[in-house]
Amino acid sequence: MNAVAVFANQTFRSLRSRNFRLFFAGQLVSQAGTWMQSIAIIWVVYKLTDDGFSLGLATAAQFLPVLVLGAWGGVVSDRVDRHKLMIVTQIGFLIVAAAFTVLAFTDRLNLPVIYTLSAVYGVITAMDNPARRALVVEMVDQVDVANAVGLNSALMTGSRVVGPAVAGVLISTVGPQWAFLTNTVTFVAILAALLLMDRSALRSPPVVPRKKGQLVEGLRYTWANRELRLTFILLAVIGTLAFEYQVSLPLLAERSLSGGSGTFTMLYSMMSVGSVLGALVVARRTEIRAKFLAQAAIWLSVCTMALAYAPNTTLAAIAVVPTGFAMVFLLSGSNAVIQLLAAPQMRGRVLSLTAVVFLGSTPIGGPIVGWIGERFGARAGVAVGGVASLLVAVWVLRQLAKPEVMADTEAGDAARFDNAGTAPAPTMVNPAA
Image (cartoon, rainbow, N blue to C red; front, side, top):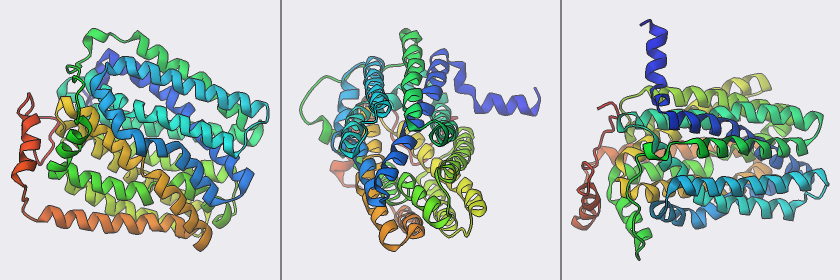
């Protein structure tokens, strides 16, 4: 077997699962369409208002429901059949996409309508996100979990290469309404994939019986494990102030780089190229630790500052590639750590907290970054993320250098689930073991 075949076999090994192949193909099409819709919304809002704060509010409207309902979405995910839940959520997304399409073609899209539809989309996302992430684990063997998580991240970020690029062409030629229409059609792919899956091959854990206190139980379980706790803190800070590129990049493209929709979508696509490379590197790794994630955050800080103060579009396009690499390295690596440390019966709740601290932080960070961009300039709106990433990374590294001290009650919370069918949560994740 030649080197290329060995590389491909190692990098894409989880695609040996038919269910995961179907899911991968369906999501690749659907997520590209979703990014087209996101770009179209951003551009419509920006053209209606010419205001960075309004961009932040549009993003906040979509992700505020995740902040409020995300943890409950994890509880629901642990209580129900995740495969069936995903079918329901995809139908919901399809309905919202169709509404955007009809209103765009009839020239009835205004700020209240966009905010309302975005909020409905956010409610569906709060239910869909933990179920979708947990379902990925159920499609493959345990030894391939980290690889599947990495490839799924590559899929999600790879769709950002195609989606924004196609959206940019459509917006600049025939108008944003065609981006909305294309997104609506793409949901057929993921629905078909879900319906064609072999449900008997899924490694689904028993459904958790409904009882009081399950949300608090998930929170206590997560906080009791230092690796999980520090990973979530890292994600929360970076998600709030650094991962707000949907707000900061349009301002940077138009106000600092003297570009337009083409410059904005080009930067987004170049960032996605770096993201795909980062996700594939994570898929090949056999060890991921919180310390490594903190080091990746330092790299993100350096790249973000380079992007913020790039003097022209060419250098900005170069700087945005490693920024995307570091960004998805953090996301994909964090997901791998969380997926492998969480006990199966807690996985939905723990993963829902990922959505809360990352997606749910956007309603807070989006307006803040938008305001900074308006008040102090577009470059400052990007740079604040670089500073925040550096500070939280240094803090996490200092915490990891200290001996771990855990209260008896916290140790009991973590051990109670680890003893119920899983190994004790390790400080090092080795998915190849």
